[in-house]
Image (cartoon, rainbow, N blue to C red):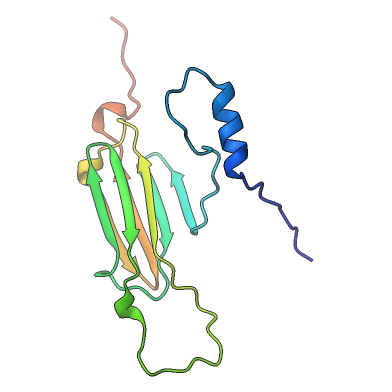
Length: 141
């Protein structure tokens, strides 16, 4: 039997009260402890940073990968053209939701040399470490 985790939902009143008592803020914001609802694995090894993003049922042309300065953004916009006219579904169990994911990448990774590949519905991104950030041994004179 699986474990059930309950996610706390914030109502507009919760956000208003929280922002009212945080006087140093000048604008209302949403809670920052959001849970990513899209299946993503992010990991790092000695060569760089890796992203594995589930894109089941999508092609390379449907998924957009943008890099702007130090921000990586991966998105898929489900358009109304995806709907099939004159078709009656008896059951529709495959979720075909759009997504817009973004991450701020640390300077120790060279985002200008990002590599992307897609196979079997899995988008793989690799961002190598910058040569300056790799560990090296320095001899003392």
